[in-house]
Length: 136
Image 1 (cartoon, rainbow, N blue to C red):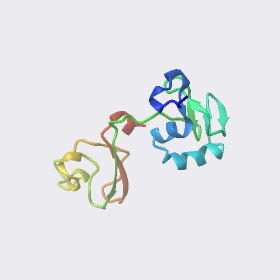
Image 2: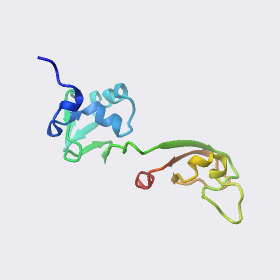
Image 3: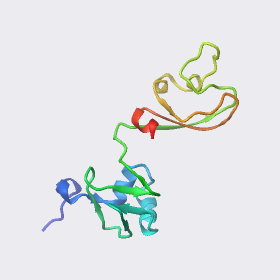
Image 4: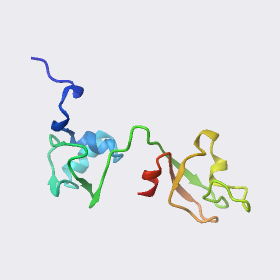
């Protein structure tokens, strides 16, 4: 008897915990295994330490460091930008020509900023094409 491919599993059986965590953006499957084995993940309020644990997306409540986590949609994209001082965190401003979006290729200029840095501050900015993700 052949084993089932991942697509043949019924939805109610769920997916392995490390795959779910990777889909949530917490790291590679190998990295997420460390999170599980370290006891940092709960499902429906119970600490999970077994890599064979399955999650039913949309049914089970999975938390990491006390925060509920959700899979990123397949179309969600994240961009990390090292913002130099003197650039405004805005799409456009009539008083400032230099915005962080002027540093990006045209194809990224519709992204939203997750958080802000002051005009004279420098540091890492997260940008995404997913407005809901930007608000989290």
